[in-house]
Length: 269
Image (cartoon, rainbow, N blue to C red; front, side, top):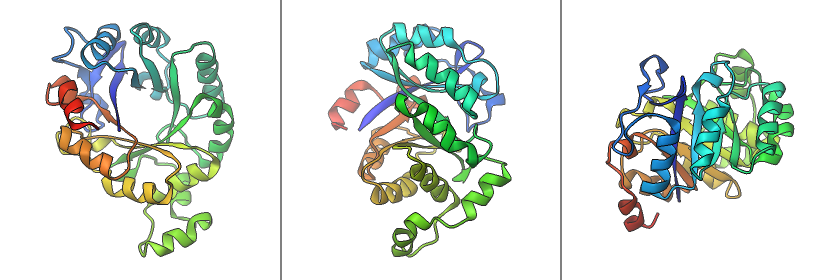
């Protein structure tokens, strides 16, 4: 299983996530680097961790502002490939991000987050734009519930999932709203899925996505399954690997020194 370090960007700096409450995010204080500049953190991830890719959540772009292209360039210059969530919520933003990815060789993928897409009816058109760029659908959750106030998404999350009816029936349990949304995205054509529960981020609770990830892996052995939120150390990573995750996002445990490169190598994840 791959370990992907995380950079949450806000106002040109790397910030520390706290349970998804962005009003509480502050520049990160890390054992890895002396400051919170994207360039410094990227260099630390490469030199201290041997990282090759990084998940970048551009929180300003997710809030509707312009993507932080300069920060992306600084991170890429350190030798990292970027998996970027920059608030793709419509075809226009999708096209801009796709154009940026096409102009560079440093992109590991474009993230389409549930939080940013206001209507499931837009998802197919967005996918058609970003599909060539290793796109990922991010199933954004808070305490296991989909992060959306859209009535259209709420309807989609409560409606039938006919394509997978036999499988869901065989599981002998009703599918959750989160599971239904994941199935909708996979049915559209996404083959990379990120299950991210922001309520677990930075609060030392451990990953809460294990049951859902296990269900999704059993139902879809062909997809790339990534998860994030709450990883405290090697034991948590082993749990995620055991439930079939291909990669895990990690932030606070790296900055606090609770998880080291040597531990990862020893665990052979």
